[in-house]
Length: 259
View 1 (cartoon, rainbow, N blue to C red):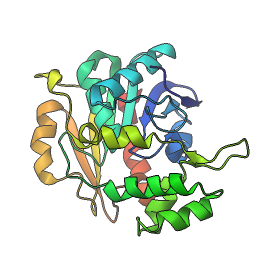
View 2: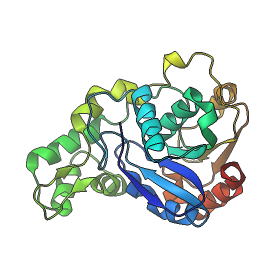
View 3: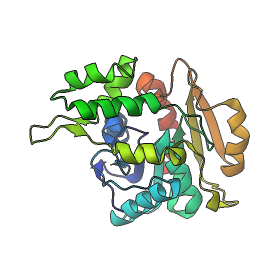
């Protein structure tokens, strides 16, 4: 399936995959920086942003979407960067077809299953959809009954459409996210077998986040033998937004893998 993309810059192609409830727009500041040296492709994953909606959200299906999109753009040997859910999809991509990727960066996620974390968010998004607010401010007041953190609400509401062309609503397929949540929080596909990716690989975690743990490193290096793991101090799960300068410094040091 062809996904919605935004392209910036010239040079070796780098695909960026956002996390759950996000869109490619969330990564525009980092994409602008990378576009000074690379052809950056910001992707909206299925059921997010302006990409098509489908009922399935397995890692395999989402990786196939990325492969289809890269091929449709005529790109070869791309670098790939993924955050959170997008990081899992990136891992699935390189393990499925290692020769198609020149290097990978994974941000604050590991190749494993995670506990249930997002039920209040899903409930809040449904409440917003039911209330049909006409502005993000009104949507925020509804969402605040379910999600306490203002920063998280601000992130979520970037995907609430308040365009003047008609409707208001989420650009996220809430039904699919809820129905497929076990896939989303789960690990990589079992069908990958003993696949490994030997290309340059960088995992970046936030010191204040529990998504990427020291005990994950053994499994990471089984799947990605050349993986390096870096932790950014004073950063949580949204490492790239919370410590942008430190994050981009690490990315700049990895650019050789994309050139």
